[in-house]
Image 1 (cartoon, rainbow, N blue to C red):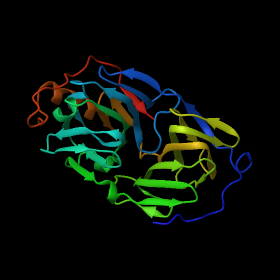
Image 2 (cartoon, rainbow, N blue to C red):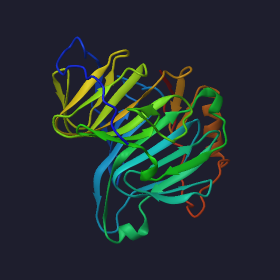
Image 3 (cartoon, rainbow, N blue to C red):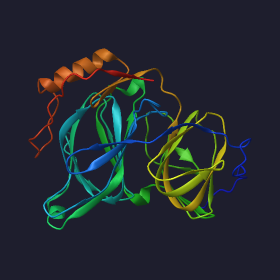
Image 4 (cartoon, helix red, strand yellow):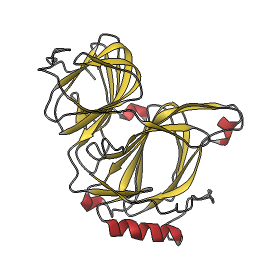
Length: 312
């Protein structure tokens, strides 16, 4: 698929690009066998479009016998979106799904009214050692879809469109952008893309949605004369068409969408437009009313009572 050329804003011209609203440096969290950097939610920004949760996993290296072990846990009211740069994760869920996800592929699990899943390193990889580096995000469902039947969709790397040209390589994970359209079905209009730029290449980013951001993964970029390195979430002001220039080879994720159709409440792994629905999900998990994951008898207990959070 070819790159659709367009006039770029002038890098360094603040009139054509004065777009950064919020800069978030994610906090690191140790999950035992590996660490994550959590960009969303944060005190500076609760959501970007439907994205209510955004974690960078790794990069981590597992020694012999080690691996990722996220025991079965529940979700409601969201889709989990798993995308890897390196390594492999074995996904199992209460629908009976059992398959690995590898770099460039996409796991899109829609919880709807309730699903349980686990994420682990396969036994074969524990025998050799392995690596893990990727992004897991949660996308809040439109209110009308929050109680839909749970579903799981896996997309091979070849199914996601790739746009190339002028030093740019863009894999469009979801939505419509850069002259391409992803086959991924979403609950609301959004964009999600994996972008790689050669040094000196420029990516124009149109104001298609009011809420847009990029998450820097590797290398270095410049926006309106300001430089940024890896591990930062840049949230843009609405309405500006901006340019992102790589000062060295760079990789980043583009994410965004329209504001949600009302506030969202987030508690542990539950997202809903209704706080009473989260209270019900808590009791359902406590009482063992969620479906279980076949061949994975462990589970994560309901945590102590943190205060519920409402977004936005």
